[in-house]
Every structure is written in structure tokens, then in C-alpha cells.
Length: 77
Image (cartoon, rainbow, N blue to C red; front, side):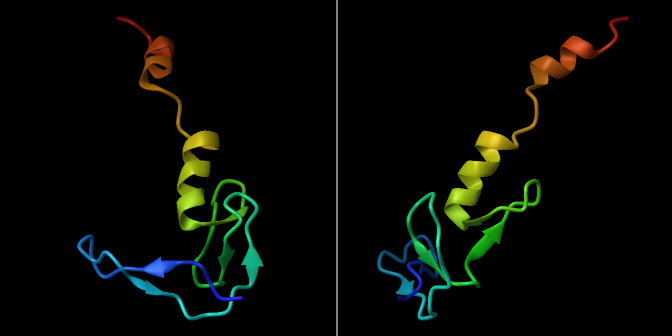
């Protein structure tokens, strides 16, 4: 099975070029087959994702606290 990532040169590149490498793993988040080159590791929990799923994962599980929470703990003065 080949990697399911499609590489593009720019935002105007509507078709792109499929990666020709053999897939090493199928990720459960998106069910895509991805090669080692396109696998991305989360620095916080060290799980491995495709780059799109990593972005969603980091926002959902490792997002920094909101500014409102930060202000609540600041000393007024």
C-alpha cells in the first residue's frame, strides 16, 4: 500500500502529486496509510499522527489555557 499524502507545490496546485513511498502504518484517527516521512509526532504525548490529525490533536488536547484564566490569577494592583 502506498502513502495517501498528496504533495502540492502551492495553493494554486489543484491536483498535486501523490507520495510514491510505501506506507508503514495506518493511523486510526483518519484511517490513512502514511509513510515514515509524512508521520508527525506530538511533542507533548509522543503519539504519532498524519500532519492534519496532529494539528487537530494539539488543539483539542494540548491547547494552552485561555487568557481569561490567566487574568484571573494575576494580582490586581
